[in-house]
Image 1 (cartoon, each protein chain N blue to C red):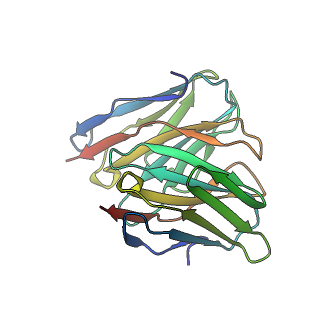
Image 2 (image 1 turned 90 degrees about the vertical axis):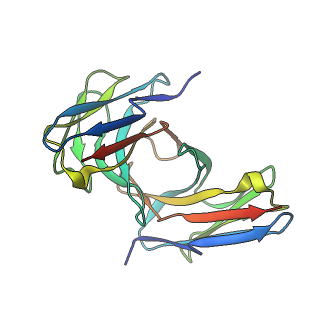
Length: 109
Length: 113
């Protein structure tokens, strides 16, 4: 069992739909990261959370420390949101990240 | 532009050949990391350097060596490449403290034939 699990693995949506990607982790963490990887391969950091909720444009990330669960939401999705979204947990014991396998999101016009 | 620069972007090696992947960051970050990304698996840590002068093994260090040449540069060396090392390699850096984000390089796609 992976220490960081994401669901779903693949997600197809229509433009304008509200999207949720989930992340569960089993380790104690100091922070939870959401990353975006575009088809070209580059990885961009979207959010880093240690509690509560953060919002950036149409993206919202939440975390529930007690339940060891985080969600990434995309409102009014657009084809340019198509990418792989990766959840990564930074363990309390150090600076290393443990990554989920990623969620492939495809938003169709 | 500030960030993490990786070279080369693509490389094809024959089994047994050696090569070094270069990584440099200009953000004055303390910590640097090398990951590999394989289909169906999350990014896995190969080696990391928490600060200049130190290096430590990650999850999958076998077949690799690293050098933290100075605060800016962290190189990954494959001494004798094997087909199992075909992967996409990412370098990343961060301040090394708990609530700081990470910056990733654009990746190196390596094929070993």
